[in-house]
Length: 147
Length: 147
Length: 147
Length: 147
Image (tube, rainbow over all chains, first blue to last red; front, side):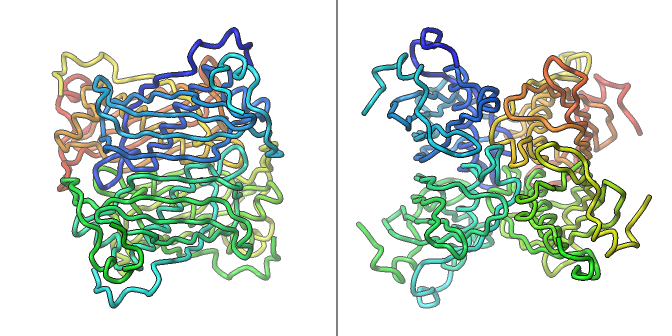
């Protein structure tokens, strides 16, 4: 991973997203499970922006694993909607860290589809043993560190 | 829907489940999103056992919609594992109701993979307007009714 | 794997399947990709019936990999439909083997939703090197062997 | 839909794509079903570039439906790979039309992961009745028209 100095000043990213047929269900709206694939895309891109890309996970076997997801479904998104997912690192414990996501309609930030918080644990594959969250993150974002 | 008298005495069901390749990811374990498909299978079978089948949803347009999911990932399940999902109706508000799920290894109930609580809202398709939760459920399970 | 003598006389299995919300799309029918998850469930259960279970794949790293899929979508299945997938081993080459699938409405075999043929290759994980198809299959089903 | 004059001269698009965890399986590679979600993304973007966006499908109910898929899996893609999908309209019958897809590693066009041909039918939702393929396409790409 890159040094803390190379990281963006705010651990936040906005990721555009389209709704495809495979995201929807017979209710005519995006299926509740599909939002979590979109959250994963945003999470992966935020991690990459913070120096921890999928390629690096693949090489090192050091990966963030979802320990808990809370997601509130506020309004249904539909086929062809252009979405924005704001993804943000909000808390760093020793091993766990927390991310927050909010999905809105592009150009209409008042139209909020979902809010989601995920608790992640850093683990070493293939053993699955928990590891400390990235030291560069603790250094770059001291305001997020909790005991 | 059937009358309250025809319902099982406890709103609970245990659903067996297998882990297939499409449920897993390159970490060698079941992917966090895949558990929610399994939860949906268990939820649909519990609803059917309580008189509210997918066929009936399809015909009437009256469907339960997920308003909130909380899921804790406790241990990773693996390819070829035989799982049991216990699904249970735990609370009935006017419009919302709550379901709890626990996924364990078949034959080893101490091996718990996930715990999940979902808050559902009954809506009428295609309008999407919220409706009261099934009256037969309130009648059959008065101990679950909260104001 | 079990000996050839322990295998069923015909390499064929019929697997019941339900259509859930996550299988459907905003067109109101089962999404084209979802049928291939169902085909995989049928394929995995057929392989297990022929002595090659997912658990054994997991332990030995010897797995069948899809090399080619052809699928014809004849009619759309819908939410709540009860389906039957007939899965059959139809050809055994040295390394490759071929499976055929047909999905019908339970109780109405004239309602055919999809027909599918998949060509599989046996590979050894993690190297990914191709291996000979199971010898017990060649022994048990000599009528399917082609040069 | 736009007029034929507004269409690009060649009905071809190259769509970049990333491999996420949810695309992979326990074999350590992209799952065979996941490639078809990627093909759908490329197909939707090609259709939009040719004047037939998802938003328009949603409004008019006129949608392309997959009638047949043939896909050859040549090499496995892996987590973190950057892919390119070339999507191309290759044939226009009265009702059916055909699309070809090829997925390669970005920057290494000789590394081909999959080749796929899909036959599509234009249908009117919710009736599901087949309709003629877009007239603007026949006008703009006469070399692709077959009887």
